[in-house]
Structures are given as structure tokens and as C-alpha cells.
Length: 378
Image (cartoon, rainbow, N blue to C red; front, side):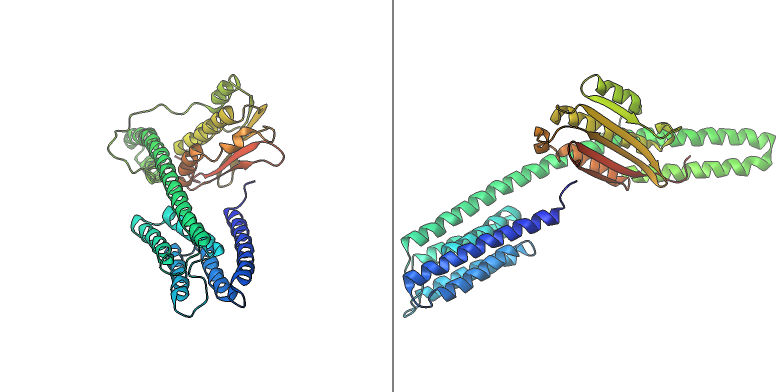
């Protein structure tokens, strides 16, 4: 069972909030000891505002970053005013909030806004030297800004490479679907041609039965259009030709081949039903899920002793699950969720289905997909 993303996000926000609160309390105590009186109040309030903006950055990153820098600039300007006995630079706690805002902006925003936020942080640092700067606090602010920019740029580069790799996987999956589209079209059109030829024979022998044959041709044509729409929905590339490709191997042969290479693989299929009775696009997708899942087990779960492949038929479609029994602590946990799952999910969701992958209770890993199957089949 995988942990929902919103739970992870909520836990990370709560943890960051606790860090901010601790830093604000420590900063307020240090200000009270150094500047005396109620000098800690303005800085603490301003710091709390910046930290709150940092916690809310996921909703609107551009304006929260701009507002946080504005508060920091205001603190510098107030500290520079004659007669005001307050620090003229952001404190360490505010620097932490600004670092989160700056790093997030550099990572996620487009180039121009990210550059503007970076420049704004630099201006705040430069402004400190015009007031009554504390060398230690100014150094902390400068180092925080540099680290935020560096981490943001590193994560921005990583995200770009990840998106490029994911796009390559999707492109490869689309090309594979383009090849399979040839077989799907040939499957349906061949049936229509046979029925049309039969209609000519029926027309000479029993013209009254021609209507039934035409109805069958109409049904086959409708199924062909449905199948093509479900597959073509994912295709975006038209430059490469789609060469003919053979139909997918039977799942039994696939399971037998993998059993010779690694753990024992067992296959459970619906009683009295072969995979060839499903629409071609469903048959190829079920095969692809099983193939990719077994490959992942061989690569990342070598401690698994057995694998169970279960294919079932529901009233609305087909389900397929591949589960292994690798013991907890297997190194494959660090590799799962990669680009193979992207390709599988891309294909399954194109057909209107769903795919879930994650650790099993106790031990092992499971990949489960549900695919709808049209109620009428040619």
C-alpha cells in the first residue's frame, strides 16, 4: 500500500512548521538578550509572516516569494531609519524562511520569475551593508541565500532531466502503440472483409438474410472505430512509420520463459477463457504489464522466491496483478516507481483503466491494473 501524496506533503509541511517555530523562539530570545526590551517583537512578527508564506508557497509560489522578500526589505529599511534601535537585517529564522521561498522559486518557477526572485534576495543582502549590519547575521543571510540558489538550481536541473527521461519513455510507449495499431486495425478490417464476402454469397442464395450480415459488419466497424480511438488517443508522433509487428506471446509462454531465468512464476487465468477473446488492445496491454512487472522483479528483487500472476475477468473488464514475495528491506524499494511504471500507466490510462503499484503487507511488491473491456466484441 502506497502512502497518499497529500499525507507526505502534510507531514513535511508540519515538520517544516515545527522547525520554523523553534527558530523563531530562539531568535526572539537572542534579540531580547542582545537588544533588550521589546526589540524582539517586530522581528518575530515579521519572521512569522515570512515563515507562514514559506509554508503556503505551494498555493502561489510567485507572490509568496515576492511578499517574503518585501517583508525582508521592509525590515532592512526600518532598521536603517534614524532613531530606530532595531536590527537592520533579517534574522536567522527569517533567513531560513527566505531560503525555502528562494530555493522553491528557483526550482519551480519559469526562468524570468525565478531570476527576479534570486535578484530580489541579492538586493536584500546588499541593502544590509548600507545600514547597521551585524557581521555574523549578515554572513548567515548571505550563506543562506547562496545555499538556496544552489539547491534550487540543482533540483531544477534534476527535475528537467527527470521530465526528459519520462518523456522519452512516453515517446517509446507511443511508438510501440503505433506498431500495435497496425495489428488492431488489421484484426478488425479482416473480419469485416470476410463478412462482406459472405454477404455477397448470402445475397445470391437468400437475399432476406443480407440484413443480418450487414448488421454484423456494422457492429464490427463500430468495434474497429472504438478500438482505434482508444489507442490513437495516446499517439502524438507521425514522423515514424508503424511497421507490422507480431501479436503478443501467450501469457503461459511468457511466464514459462521467466521461470527459467529467476523465481518460480505461477499464472492464474479465468476458467474457460483465453486471452485471445479479449480485444487486441487489451490483450497486448495485459501482456505488456506482466512482461514489465516480471522484468522489474528480475532486476530489483532478486531475493524473491516466487511470483504470482493473476488475470481475472470482472463484469466490466479485465484485472491483472503481478505480486512477488521478496523479503522486507530488499534494495529494489529504492528503484521502484521508475520509468517502467510510467509507460505501463500511460498505456493503461489511455484505455480508460487504472494501475496501482506498491509494497504488499508484510513482504513483497504488487502491480495491479484494471482495464475496461467493451461489452460488445466483434
